[in-house]
Length: 251
Image (tube, rainbow, N blue to C red; front, side, top):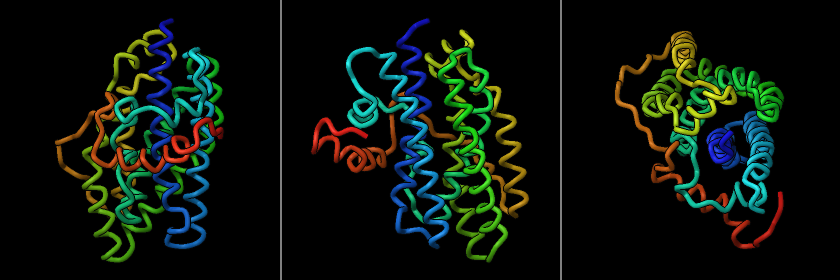
């Protein structure tokens, strides 16, 4: 097995959860209610817990002396391989929940398949993580329904958020060279096979929420190749501040 491809593959999975966890963490103390605020904080902690397992494994695979903290906190922007969806800002609560929902549905389907990986470490991480992601998916789906089928104002805001974030969903199903290599070895998940199920599930929940399914065929990509939106640099400035200001700190 090509260790570099495995390393890149792990980063592609972990970076999604790291960046989304950071975005949710920004809401601490700013949620619309105390209960929702705590729920979003807990989901952020779930995601950070998952990425620790991934980065510990990545550090072992790299074998160059770097720690999980180095890999998580000290890479440059172009070396992060997360999809563009998860780095989008918390414009308002509708955007936060729409972003969460659009990723959660994918994340759950992905982890279901990753549990079957021939790599026992990845399989074990997926088996543990899917219990948390099942809750994340239920939580965000409930908010889509609550806001979509709520007041005229809440429906308008949720529809706007779904419409704006829709262009980032197709990238979830793009394969990098590392993805293809790991799929061929029975380690990785063939995300192209998840696409139909994903959009069917998304569409069913949007219809139940009295929201329109976006018809836009324009999709944006680049995150998996390290080409990010303008939001990523600002996010990393906050994420990496402590580690760069006080070197050698540990989680």
